[in-house]
Length: 165
Image (cartoon, rainbow, N blue to C red):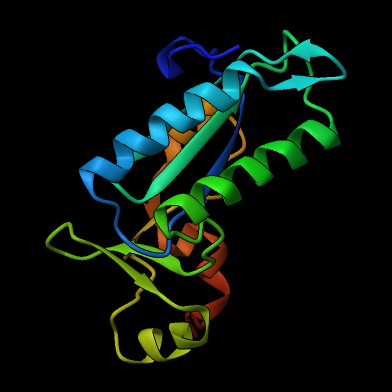
C-alpha cells in the first residue's frame, strides 16, 4: 500500500537507485505515477507492504518500506527490482548505474564511472572532502541524515592514501 514518503517511519528500510542520466521533469512525473501504481500492489506473501518512493534531484529513486508492518520477502524485493527495470525500459534509463555521484564545488551533480575513479582522485576532481551521494543508506533516518557525505566517509575512502607521519 502506497503512502507519502514523509509518513514512513524513520526506521523504514530504503533502497536507492541511481539513473545513468538526468531525468526530465516529465519523466519524473511518469516515473512517480508508475511507482505509486506498483507500490499500491506490492506485497510479501499476500500481505500488502506499507511503502513509498520518490524521485530525488531528477536522478535517484528512493524506495522505502515500513518493515514494522510487514517484512518484505526476497520475492517482493525481486518484484520491486523488476518494476524498476520495466520503468527504466519505458523511459530509457538504467537504474543500476554504479558510478560515483558527486557534487561539484558549485553544487552541480556529476558522476564518475567506476573505471575513472582512480584518475579522478589523481586529477584532484575527487578528494576526501568531495561531497558524494550516499546510495548505501539502509533506513529513512540514515537517508535523511547521511544522504550527502564526504567521500572519505563513503565507500570511496579506499581510493585515498592514508596520511603519512
